[in-house]
Image 1 (cartoon, rainbow, N blue to C red):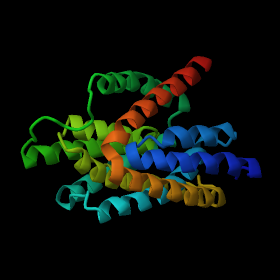
Image 2: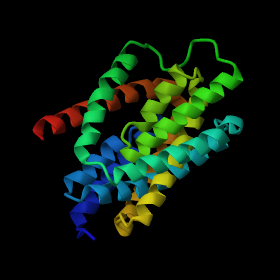
Image 3: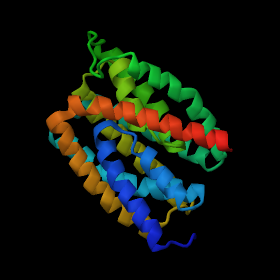
Length: 255
């Protein structure tokens, strides 16, 4: 088990609070938390596992807020949960086997595509007519499965990718997307957490304390979304994607 100091707590807890706020509105909180953990020098697999603990705690709170405010469609949500579970189980087990450099290569390929999509669309909201319920469900299930794999495998940007996929590919409204994104994210977090717990890759004290800060950030973020979601979500998505791309690119070039 790695040795933890007060510096670890200060850096990680501050970052996790900000990440929780961002994650509740537009996703991508892992962009902030993973670098914070890695800066402290903790081993990568402990970083992934401990980060999932704090992230899951915060996501529980923000998801509860979205459910309470009626943003979750349970008819399709149940299927999304089941397929996210399968994807996240596969992804998190792969994460224990695959080197960090592979993560960076994957992100370098994906991020420019996502960035182009965001910058060429003035609005996140779907303006196209909705698909039939059957087609919408199939597309949501596919997104849940593959994003579940990614979130279990690595994670940063998961919520942002979901927002873009569910509005652009599945043609959901922003409000529908918000609820579906949160239940998918929570499912993948809990599934991945279980895998890392099983493999002994959790620093419990650090993860639990960080989780309290994540809860606070997620709660404030979820409340902000309910009041000003459309105006706030798009700029945060763009900022998260841009920062994530720069971070991964710099690390890849340094290596």
